[in-house]
Length: 148
Image 1 (tube, rainbow, N blue to C red):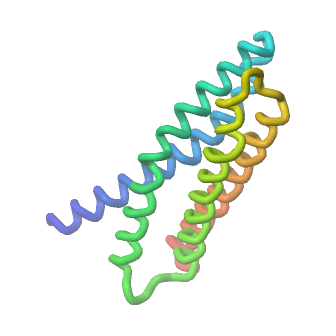
Image 2 (tube, one colour):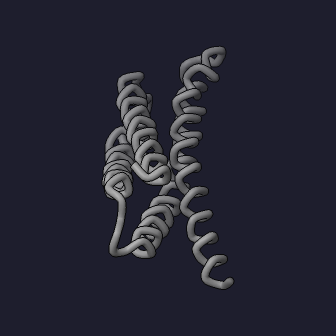
């Protein structure tokens, strides 16, 4: 009984973390459309603040997602289906993209007196890459669940 509850909690933590990671990226991609009515400076401010909150949250979410994912894989040893290996690799790549976002365009946006649209375009491309990798990771997880 306790064992089942423990692994259910670990899976729940993993799914909540992944939902925040993926959903937050999709949300940040929608912000340019939501701020069209604002002047440029206000729109850039909203985009910077919203992406900043998302990225600050990821500092906590990514380690929890990786640790819970490793725990779930450890539970399945020694027979781990290949889609879960793919999902883990994509998760690590997504963590790398997060690092590129934080230490690349986001840092330059914060340091700029007047951020330029090109800076936000680089951030948007990395958010799109996060969504793409997250979609592939979810597809791999689904493939592993149905036993491919």
